[in-house]
Image 1 (cartoon, helix red, strand yellow):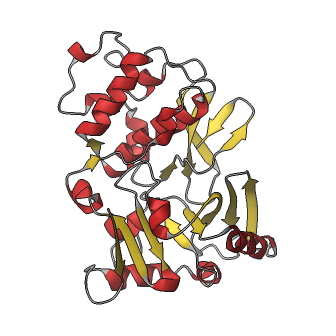
Image 2 (cartoon, rainbow, N blue to C red):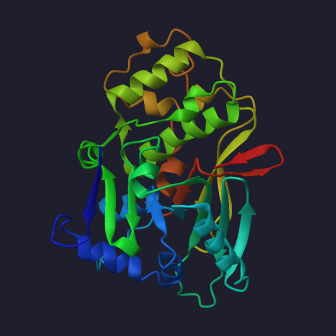
Length: 306
């Protein structure tokens, strides 16, 4: 299910480009030496995202931060201590049981933005980590210290088909944990927007089944998506729904874009009457970064930030 391929020998046609882009982010080298495993949005972008004009950087809007895992708790703690020892360069944005999040403090305006999450809740090999991901498409990892890429065997095909396929969306199996369900539902919207995906048939059927069972599911807090405004990571957010909004109306466009959707499937009317994604939001997507991460999220007063 998970393929492991060295970045040598031409198995991945743009392997040199992947290594060049990663090595250009110099501040990550100190974490690579500790055995950092990058998983999720960043390695997915290394594999699939378009490049900027000269091919030396990923085009804006395809990943937000670097989710970094380690094989064991000791290595993760060493990485956290390393970043904590450099407060003049790394601002600790949050510290939760799931992850420590950092923003790189730029000393020069031409330095790139850099946001890092050291994951504290999950440890293991790259294969073990990506097997637990919610979507096939982002079940991808990069381990620079071993010069290896790992990906779900169906990820390239699903990307080429522009379909978001489910792997293990475990948060949907916890209806008693409303915040987890909201995070997962928001992640469906994140990936369909970011990559211009539609739901796979399996994902569509899974969400439709939950909707029919829980049509009155409401947001327990205001829900926002973090964005990068180009100058400061974790600096701004845009709302996708307010407290007590019906969540299905808030994400109705992920249903309506599927080829099998019909208003006849909607006995409750929430999806058919939902609001489509505002044009202003769609304009923002190519030039900014929307981030809804399940590994950790920040809480502030009555809002949930993903």
